[in-house]
Amino acid sequence: MSAHAVIVMNNVGENPNLIGMPRAELENFFVGLGEKPYRARQVLQWIHQRDAAGFDVMTDLSQKLRDRLASIARIELPQMLRESASADGTVKWLFESGAGQAIESVFIPEAGRGTLCISSQVGCALDCAFCATGAQGFNRNLSSAEIIGQVSFANRVLPRRDHGEPAVTNVVFMGMGEPLANYRSVVPALRILLSDLAYGLSRRRITVSTSGIVPHIDRLGHDCNVSLAVSLHAPDDELRDRLVPINRVHPIEELLAACWRYAALHANRFITFEYVMLAGVNDSPGHADRLAELLCGKPAKINLIPFNPFPGNEFRRSSASTIQAFQNRLRRRGIVVTTRKTRGDDIDAACGQLAGKVINRARVRLGEKNLRMAKA
Ligand code: SAH
Ligand code: SF4
Image 1 (cartoon, rainbow, N blue to C red):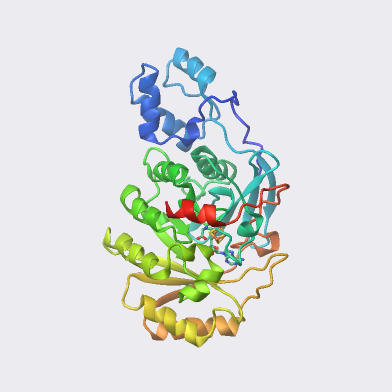
Image 2: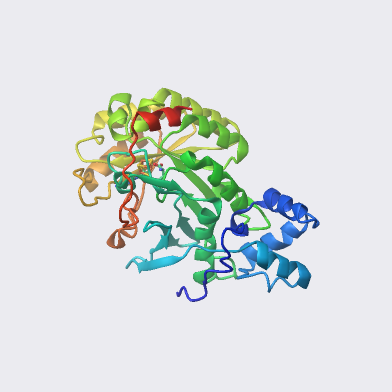
């Protein structure tokens, strides 16, 4: 695989980057130019399905319109700084995100599907105790163009699947950042992923993972009901307050109530609860029992994530036998539970290891100001 096919395209100053516009926004854009709204459909397909690298190839638009678009708009992909390939087939890309900062995306090939794990922010302010992204602090939100650009980039550089379909069949917002803290950009990106004129992914193939920004869980349910994963990691508020500080704003009871409301919006909708396995911290039989009590009889699945270590962090991963015993104990209580296979850890691409290797990132943490913002 090579990145040669990808060029930074038509980078004309601050002209709008059409790659991040969902259909309604693109229709408004064309109407604003005095054009018919259906131009949006054509351009969406060119960019996202036919990998257009510029406007000149859009032969079903008049030459005059193509020239005009080239002077007032752009189609720009993120600039790839480094590609790392893991022995297990996982690929990680580091993308430029301005001012010496970088974000990361990870492609995980599996039989029958290709999952792209994408970032939504440069860093993260929520400061979960076991997360490399959180340890870096927060720098800024990504734009919808920067979010969808990660998917477009992957599909352009990866070989197509057997029947000519794009390489990316599933997208998970589990890279750097808290997607629901960047709601304004994440929702347009979701609309593009769902659109039949662009990626046409079903709701089940798109997962937003959140540490629990409750008001935005409700909004998301109504705006874009994709699959939801919630980073629970502890069965009681005392422990969760320490591991996932946003719990001090939205405690477990409030969070779970939002999850059940979300699930109720669609038939057969399950919420996935992520639970990082930290040796001696949250992995005892008692923790398993309390977790089962919270989720028993609810539309819930649990995904146990073996902790992935990173420099400067003192947590340790629970042993394989402890994880197995925890899983068995939950299963005996009738809970659907899986353990996530660790992929790409030889290239620091496993969950929670994405740090973007940046210089000078402002260390903004979840202080009182952020807590107030998150509450608002
Ligand atoms: N901000 C979102 C999504 C990104 S993190 C969220 O927190 O849900 C994706 C998942 O990786 C989350 O469940 C997160 O808690 C988990 N994670 C973070 N650091 C980890 C680590 N060091 N080892 C294993 N999982 C980790
Ligand atoms: Fe942010 Fe998620 Fe990491 Fe917590 S686990 S610091 S919310 S990226």
